[in-house]
Length: 86
Length: 223
Picture 1 (cartoon, chains in turn red, brown):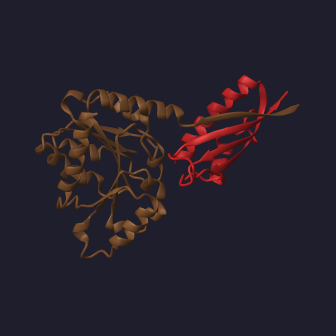
Picture 2: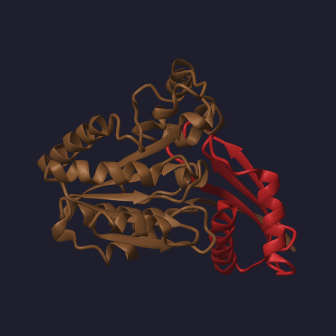
Picture 3: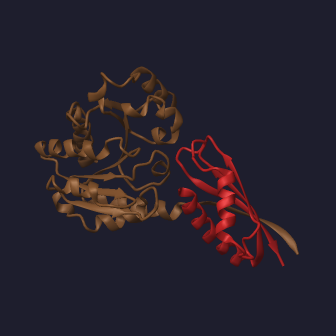
């Protein structure tokens, strides 16, 4: 299932952003996907929580997904991230 | 403790897409026209290649094949019996091929001996549509045994396709299939698409698909 590929790449991106911003936790991720994309928000959040486990940086982070009919090709855009700083 | 919102604006598959662009460039440099052949499991992708590859050879167009499956070498072995270069990729679990897999697969192909590269993707009507490989042409194989509603049920696959092959027409007398309805579902998603009825078993209309590829190969050489 490609939720795994999405989550693998998302975790790498989030770690990178947190390191740059010196964040202690990811709170919320906003993503935009193609209207026909087969990614399900519920499944994505469930699998994300299973994969990150007790990772203090990522545990509890929620992913919100919206579909944009203007996207011409299948893409998974991370629009913005809400972080908790010290 | 404070909260901060950071704008990112990044495509999570950007790295895959970069490798896909490299693949496309490499193939272009060697004048090789590439096709991503997709479709559900059992739709008849390999059978179509078994008829198509010899047809292309008659036209002096020589093919190489990358076979993608989760496990096993069955399809790679079938293609190897055609006497053409073939690389079998086992994803080990991933339900689709990715650009890096193609890049590594291409390292084992004799570029100087082929004009066309067929990439037979993992049998799946969902995920292969979402992952770019760096090809010139996307082809989806449907079969009449799968029903005419497939385009309505899996719109992304059909929306990214240049060609749809509706396979197993040799079974038309025993399988109820409404071609007008099938075509109508596709055209609601994409109006500019080539639809060809074929039989991977009898070879019917494989020459029509071969004509299409031949034209695309010639145009590719002109570009």
